[in-house]
Image (cartoon, rainbow, N blue to C red):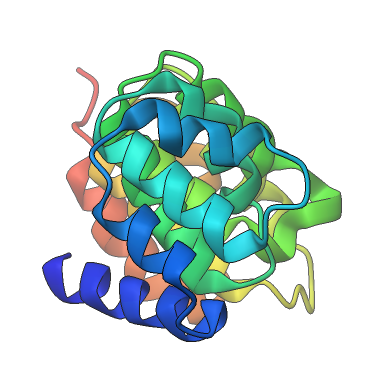
Length: 191
């Protein structure tokens, strides 16, 4: 993640155009100053993202809403960094928010990182949300195979027997079959 953080900071530096405000936000240790960026009107996206990320890593829950918005952004690098920060934030609302994003059929194109975050969190919401999301992806010609594959792999990682029926259905889909076999092998057999 260190390489990703460097790449993240470089991306934001480029987006900012190298303005002095970027350097100030990147270096400040004042959490109140960072939180102010999240609520002040007229702040550019790069500034809000940088402030939310830094607050999230510091465990400051004032970053929660901004990070959830970034988790559902159309730009995958923003989603990935938001998921990383949310995983470290320790806010009890995170799993519920990630489950809502993962199961929102209108935003399924952006569900990959919420799905991965749910698996990382291992929260009670994870298995039901992944089962729901995967079940919807098993329709013919569904274009969101990466989301489906993340659900299959995540359900295998979580190893919950409730996933067995949807994983058995996934076996019929060539793109998912191998991952479904591995996921099913990780779920303990009931006696």
